[in-house]
Length: 402
View 1 (tube, rainbow, N blue to C red):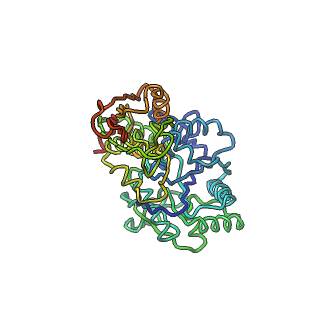
View 2 (cartoon, rainbow, N blue to C red):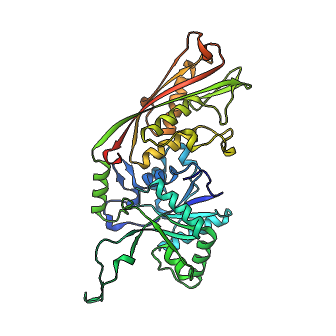
């Protein structure tokens, strides 16, 4: 996504269904999928698409414990962008309406993207297209070409028509709307006692407004049956490759009374000159993670020229990079950081840094190493003019991600 994000974009994640066709002992959105719940994977993919995106889930009133457990599997900075869950209704349309009304009570966003909780493979590119379509058209849904020949049949199974598949699309989510457009459509449908719509594009169509179709993705599958879960497991457990990424960052000292290192505030007789909070450790880690998926660098995602990042906490940058990795099916294996400075002393804060980085990345503390060294009084760090950090990370990715 370009950095010119509309002022307010919120995902409304529909997670109130029972998912009985999928089998298992719990609703499908809370079932385990290769070590993480479906909902955890879905939220990580959505929120990882851009650091300004927020999400609200519509859940069944009986599922709060399951929801809390799923959300606990997200990195802390992603959890912070989740609003309070909203209770759903007996129908999908009713659940979406409940979610929209809850958003309206808080003022409502500019754009709302309605997404199925059981679609965990949404990509950042698809999210980009959805937001662009909402801005351009006001109402749009992702769709993929239909490859099978379709037949319209009657109650007895007799073929009555063969539609031209060239004009047909299989519709997916996230479906994208100006908030006022979708809220108005759902309110009108409720007033007419129409609660039978199976997707939000159909609700808006019913009001007479045109709805555009933008390109969906074949990989954006919805988990409905046991066979779907088996296919998703195979996809996630497929042959994986290991990649490494290297990151480096440096900042000069300036006026101030502390520095941020590894997400930890450390008292010091100087601060740093930086656009954000100047955390060289988290900046180096962000670049290292982005490097593993060849996804640019910290400056391309968070331009120093953009005033919204002035003084920003760098945990947002690292969480964004990790979420981008997760959206590709990747997993962070370990982080190894070397800090170069004469002062402040790193040793007393080493464990706090490890704990904070582990929390941001959603990995164990035993997978985070922090080392420190001086430059033997040589160079800018030796002259105490600034400090630097180098980070090396290892990740695994599905081999198909090449």
